[in-house]
Length: 398
Ligand code: PLP
Image (cartoon, rainbow, N blue to C red):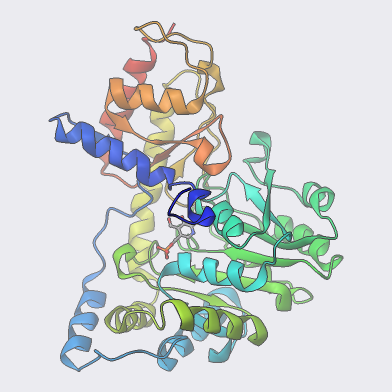
């Protein structure tokens, strides 16, 4: 018998991290690997945020922090939710965590019982399914169609809901597809949720600011279901603060308090200095984010132009985030120069890594085994070079 728990033995290693590891191995052999597997901004955290964190250290912010986060940070988060999302919350509704990832885990662990079904809109972010399994819930992936930019419709949701459905989880803007739900689409989804009083919604809005269509809609804005919505957001993507580990959730008090209790027994309040940086980030508004978004948009346009030249990729136009997510089934059944046959996106991603030295993540990790995710958060020259190489490699498949 294993010394390890069934829980950990049943858990998948994060495949985005596994691919990054493989890319590093090739790079260590001296190969020029272009890594498009990361879900991380390639920008530095803006200077004013770094300055605030340095100042916090000098001012003595070195003690344990309140479990749900500093009160002034929670108030600033309420102000942000009011300003950007027209959502009315008090600090008691906010729990600041060690990244949005912990906020999501807090919610799932605090709400899901064994046997509860959690509808996860697919393609989904890698960790959703594993979190649900950890809570002994049943993940129910619900796939959006390529024709609808991978977005699940209200009718599809209605058909998937059962009396055991407890929670619905999605991200918008979406990692990995870059899709953004419109107001109308979310209104229709909210209407379905309203008809099923046992159903709650976990809305992951971590890519909120990285949006090329303009309007970001929070499903909590639909007032008849607001009490059943938990909104998660954070600083990693919009403010290029991945390493700082600050995220948060907003929910009705009963749920926020439960998440605070969960966090109090596992990690306590998140890092003091990082929270002071997060407060400064919010006080600085959206200007720095908007500058980065201009670059993300330019790169998205560049990559879309480059993939037009790659035959056999079917790529919806991403409306947000920093990924493209082509369907690559056009290559299934083709042969590589060494005579093996490509039967999956995972094999194609591996061929691209070995032949073009470009690292990407196969869609299986996101519940979409026909697709590959390429990050567009890289310098323009790197993106250009990557897709020139990919095209040349794919031409070798017959
Ligand atoms: N949600 C989605 C959809 C993500 O892509 C990520 C990061 O990759 C996270 C949450 C986690 O964000 P954080 O760094 O705040 O934990």
